[in-house]
Image (cartoon, rainbow, N blue to C red; front, side):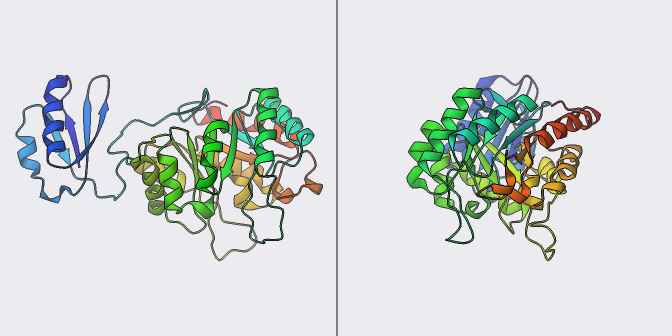
Length: 337
């Protein structure tokens, strides 16, 4: 349920309503704007009489929220959220671009790619240290050594680092060293991990599950936010369909759908969606045109010999050219790169 106070309502008046509802066992999520306050009521509100709430002369309107997600719901937070990742904003007018290799392989590789993508205009550096692979015989990442190498690249370039967590066992290390913690598609519904991340204040990049509906995706975000961490960025990375030509099917319709349902920023991963380097560029352009708040793109200096996902990685020079083309599209849709 959402209670919208009239413009100019004194703080003591809406706090009376808040305290009354908290006394009845409800959690209250308050959004205090420049001229108006909104109270989001979380809990079983079926017993709450909307008309009794409307009797208060300070209440403008009362609405029931049908969706099961509350804190991630735009009704609870009408303004777009902007997530601060070590000084880089995700959301708002400026697009965020996360770029780097699928896997961290060695210091020369990650530092070299980091310098290249920063020069091209990327704002954050991605690199896999722990790699969840379909086959147990595939390269699983350098693990903690990979995080150490990412830190070196961050020191060299100033780019905040993004890498995937696979287990709550590593949470302390990630909280200490990683700027944006990624939850991969396979862990989107690892609820215990999500709850642990919710007890931190580190921003979380939540990828959509392989076959997850939009509601399931937003409910996963709710798990993080319900524990107290509002810093969630959503990532559409393609979903599994009957089509086998591409690695996954990029669901661009998810961007406006999420924008309508939620206030959280949403970025797109065209690399994992297509699985083909030559599709990354048109899909990235389409994502920006559709309203994405940013992109996460795989870039490798030698994709032919990459230890992981070389087929979907752009070379640095192609990435630089793409960034120039994206800048023009961003301007058309009222954004900037």
